[in-house]
Structures are given as C-alpha cells and as structure tokens.
Length: 284
Image (cartoon, rainbow, N blue to C red; front, side, top):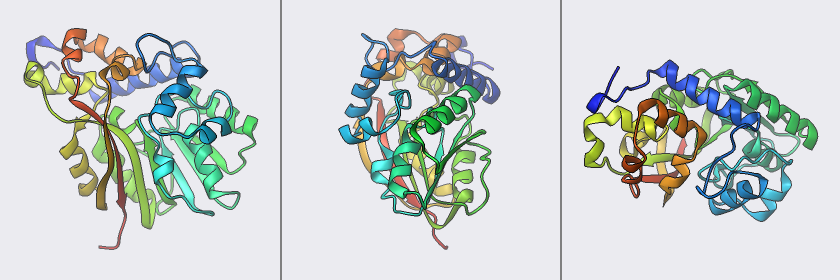
C-alpha cells in the first residue's frame, strides 16, 4: 500500500512488528535513544526526561533501577487520583514504571496489572517487580487491542504514550471500556496532532506512521467518546518537541521504513502535542 509521492504505508501487522521489534531492543538494552538528540537514554537521561514531563523527585527515586526508560509523554498516575484498594490496568506497561507508582497509591489491598506485547519487556518488568518486592503487581503478555483482562475488572485504566503506537485505537478504547467497572476511570497521556502541514497532506497515512501513529486531536477525543466513555476532558496539553519523536527508536524504525525525510519531520514542529485525557465509564 502506498501514500503520496510513492511513500509506502505500513499495514496494521507491519506496524505491530516494527513496534514490537523497537521495544524488544530497548528491553535488551540495544536501543535506548530518546529525548534530546544529543544524548542517549541512560538512567540519568531517563530521569531528566521523566522529570520534564511531570514526575516528582520522590516518584523517580521510588522505583527499581531500570524500570524508568524515559519513554513517556506525561504522568497519568499523578492525574488518576488513585485510592487504596483500587484495581489498575496499565496499557503498554513497558518496564513497569507507572505500574510501580500506581502500586504504591493503591496499597497492598489494591492490585495493578500491566499489559505489554513485547515478551522481553514483560520479562524485564517482572524482574523489576521481584527486585522491588511489588507483590500486588503482575505483568501480562498481550496486545492492548485484545486485553488479557476480564470484563468489569478495573477501577482505573492508565496509559502513557502507547496508544499512539496502536494501528487500531478504536479497538484499544473499546477494550479499555470493557475492562473498566461502571464508574471506572480512564486516564491517558499521549501524543496527538494539532495540524497537518501542507507538505504531507497528500500522504496522511504516511505522516501518521512517521509520528508513531498519532491522530488529530479532535479525532482522538471522538474515538474515546465513540467507545462509550463520558466526561471526556483534556486535563493538560503541552507542545511535544519533534526531537523526542525523531529519536524514539520505534518512530525511527517507522520513519526509515516509510522513507520520510528528516527535513519533512522537522517541518512538523508545533504540529505535535502531548495531552492528558480523562474519561469515565458511566451508566447511560
């Protein structure tokens, strides 16, 4: 399949393949570039990136070493108002960073389930859980479009800069709705588009691929509403530097596969935003 000017567009399975491969390499320590283009993402850089997107010093110091990979675009745990005894599901849990923060909020009587489609990342998260003695956290291998979680299971669903990677966001939000209890809450941080620059309007799908699948902001919010959620609100919105996206390992792989030029990508500055969105599963 191809887009404007002969740019090839990846189908859903190829997108998943690229994403899985990129995060597998991160989990193995083979690819850790993120954030600023001048540095690679070692532990120090991961902390700096996470601090810049809303994590406190206390939160950063409280998780096991290696849990924070600096790949988020916000702090959904801080905005989720988690309470003792609640059950939380994290979509795209990575090495477990947000799960471990959530575990402290819900306490021993609560429960946190992280879901990730990369076996190496799940293994890494489980090792971090053992290291940190997080007995109320578990990690499950699975796709966020088909969650290995029962209906009406969770009080809260969170996600941090992962849904934008999915080639089927409608399905992701439908699954989040399914696993939430009535009255349950959704809190996600993610990347969205604010505009489509003229240089790539002829190849919208290619553009979407090169920024790891980000949607237009209004379409993203409508997708959440269409899944059945109510009270959909943008809690916070900030500009997301294009350098962060260019240096994300998964985005890099998509950029290379789609033959998108760096010059075109740089022209997208101010077209990308990080948003934090809340929503509720209410009785209709």
